[in-house]
Image (cartoon, rainbow, N blue to C red; front, top):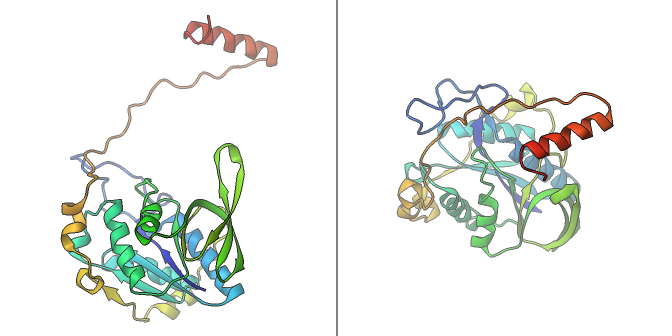
Length: 263
């Protein structure tokens, strides 16, 4: 099975205190520590496990600049077979559809049975996987937390849905799956593995190589534009209720009546 996993280099929430910049146009990116997007890491681990069991190869791809090379090498040290960097100034400022357009062009250059993304990246929109599937005209499942290979044409996938319930579906290949955290436990990447892939040449493709119209991507082609970043004002703190169950219930009823929730 040939699997392509889309990954992204993002600010590491555990290593950074994220703040809005002075103009409110972006987060303050000075001196940030970056790493691979957490959801994407689970997708790569799942792809590696599938290939270990059923054969094939895993390719990791990212849209970014020269520094995005580091997340590709990290995932290759983890066990991915190949990396692919999609880099062009024309891609800067792309919205979700623009990123999906670039990734779709890369998919068309290969021969993949399965494309995986994380459920969401640092912008939190969770839209690239679905857009990519629509552009490819293939089946799509989001929030996937279980995958079973039925044969070379079908998978059984589990999805996390509302209320903590699990939904199981059969899905035809090729398809796109957006992977939820918790589907597995991503393996540790040691310094030996990182050194092993440090000198491996990673192919780079630009808009011309991919056959992408530069005007359809980037800031100029974006249909959704970010207008502002801000930190919400803090509201009043929560009131902690004490006492036994009956006392707490009485207090809850009093509060609901006082706030207009009950009459």
